[in-house]
Each structure stands twice: as structure tokens, then as C-alpha cells.
Image 1 (cartoon, rainbow, N blue to C red):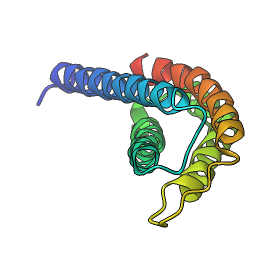
Image 2: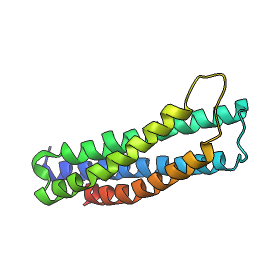
Image 3: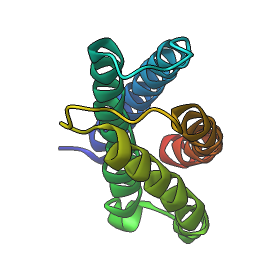
Length: 148
């Protein structure tokens, strides 16, 4: 396979990966808003189901960022310039913090418990929203690195 074809295939793969991430991001924000609209929160089966659905989508979304975008950046081998790797490394710590925030939210609210505790859900959603906003900014930087 020629280098030009490999480059074109790599670019197409990268564009598809970024598009998938952006679509999942959109789904996460839509579901985030849907969960937030349920105030005042109750321990109803509907709330539990919505939180479970949201938590599962969150995990898929952060996994795509960590194991999709970062893996793509670091698996490029010789095709990547040192500056790209340095930029990706500089972002990693803050990016990981947002992942940890999502994991904490997931651990707390994606549960099979019969009784859901929602007394801190509003505050936890607010904190999560701040982390997601930060993550979007970081993802946009990473996506720029992947596409260029």
C-alpha cells in the first residue's frame, strides 16, 4: 500500500474517531440535561433508570477519550512529531482528573441498590458538569492534535 493511501486512510480513521467522540459528547450533554430536569430529585425507579443510563453513557464517553483519542495519538509511532506528543502529555493530567470525576459519579449513582440516595445529586451533578465542561475544552485540543 502506498504512503499516500496510508495517509488518507489514517486521516479518515482520525476524522471518524473525532466525529464519534463528538456524537457521544452530544448524547452525554443531552442526557445530563434530562437528568437535571428531574429536580427535585426522588428515589423513583424512573430516576434510578435515568441515572443508570446516564452513568453508562458517561463511562463509554470517557473511555473513548482515554482509549480512543489518547491511544491514537501515542500509537502513531514515527508519524507523530515530538511537539504533538508533548502537547498530549501536557494535557493528560487534567484530562485524567475529569475521568476520575466521572468514575466517582458513576460509582456513586450507577448502582443496583434498591434505594437510591439523591440528597447530594444536585450538587454532584453541578460538580460533574464543571468537570465535563473542562473535559470538552481538553478534548477539543486533543482532537486538534489528532486531526493535524
